[in-house]
Length: 196
Image (tube, rainbow, N blue to C red; front, side, top):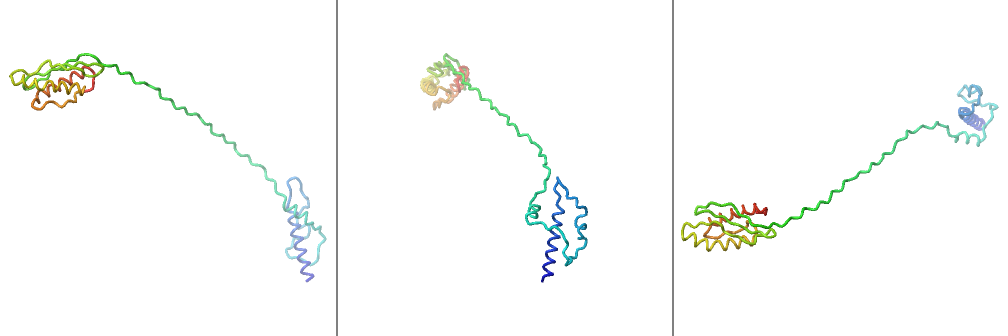
């Protein structure tokens, strides 16, 4: 058992010494020239005879193992940080719609030809509203036309003033006169610049 113990001590010593001799810090060199062969360690078979070598103490081995190898610092490329460009959104200009000027005046519509005769009206506008209507031309060829006009015109006038537009119903039994009235009214509203 003594030979085996001695063999282990020698092998451990040689291995530890090899590790110490192989380490070369960048600032110094041991200069032993030849590494383990100079110590007679060219053979891989351990011998029972101890060789007179300096055994490293546990603190020397620990310091040799824990000393980090100095590596040169690598230069990291400097990257430019992106510059934030302010984005300005143009503010929309506040536009006030033009004030609608009130429409005032008297406007004559175009003459509408019907089967029974021409129909033409005139509208009076105050503050963009129709306030009065006057029939300028109506069918008068027969006494029946005159009688029919007497019934239809007041109703058509009332509808026109109430709607203040061309949105009128017309008069039943006076469909031709109602259509002629409507056509002349649309023309008068266009001349006034009012919606139809």
